[in-house]
Amino acid sequence: MRVVIVGGGVLGSSLYLLLKERGIDATLLDNGSRKFHVTLIHSTLLKGKDIELAKRSLELYRRWGVMTMEYPSYTLGIKDWGIVNLWSAEGLDVREVEFLGERAVEGRGTDRLVNIYELRAKAPKVRATGRVVVEGNKAKVEVNGFTLEPDLVFLTAGAWNPYSTNVSLPSRSYFCWAYAVTTRSELFDRAFIYDYELGFYSRPLFGLGLRTAIVGDGEYVVAKPQEGRVKHSDRPLDSVRKRLGEVKPFYEGWGYCEGTKDLRPAIGRLADNAYWIGGLNGYGAEVGPALAEMALEFAFKGRLDREYSAERLNGLADFSWEKEPHEI
Image 1: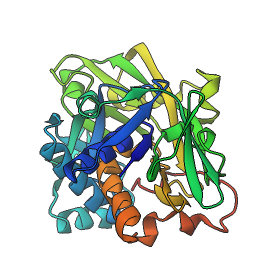
Image 2: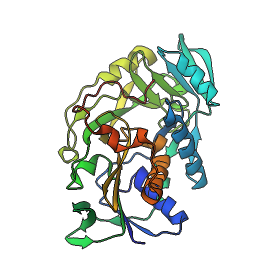
Image 3: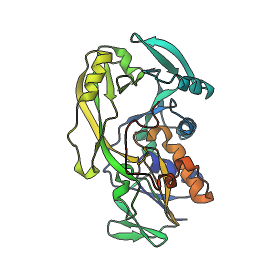
């Protein structure tokens, strides 16, 4: 079987490894346009079925020998405390504590950094730009002036998905950013903070107990990846200072993400032999490997949970983005 994967991020790399375990060799195309941070957040403090996907993704990371680094997390500003009961029912180690003078939920063994560079290094890539072209019920892949006709195609190019096929997708790209900052305490390089009152997150930069952290707030600017860095606000820093005290940014990291109309991940069929996985909306490291596994079940056995099916987006009004649905 000839399989081509277009896009070598968390999803594409996971697909490659899962196919390899099945004895199927795939060609993984990636043109190097996307930015990847060395580590990304993996949290099980999600909602609904996403919790199970996050748990399964962690199992896969461990199976593949991808390095993870656990730290405690503190969630502030919870409006519906029923979510804490849900987390406990899911077997997650959470408890109510006081943190920074506020009522909070401490998580132990619930949050970690995942070394995405390690994951991607385990999946060899061909440096090339691939475009999935559908004619009738069949998909081909155009690569640097050549045309490939594989048995199976997966499009997993993240924010580049809408621009990597001639099929209209129910997703769009957006610009996002975060800051590396110096802080007043070593604590912030050894803990995750999710602040739903002031609307920001903080995560370890190196995890070595230095007075540093990475902070952001999930703000976005709808834009195309080809636009590069775009103008944006510095609001995340104002929110962080209210809670953590003085922070000084010394580096701005930015990139592009992809969101569907309802800001939930989706798996869809492009043709009889082609599938699209996307809309990870910035939390692909948490659920991506399990979604890749789910996509293979769809491709080989026709089984797919409707909650993650792109068909649910049919008939939805245009994009209306507010709070991200995976947030509490």
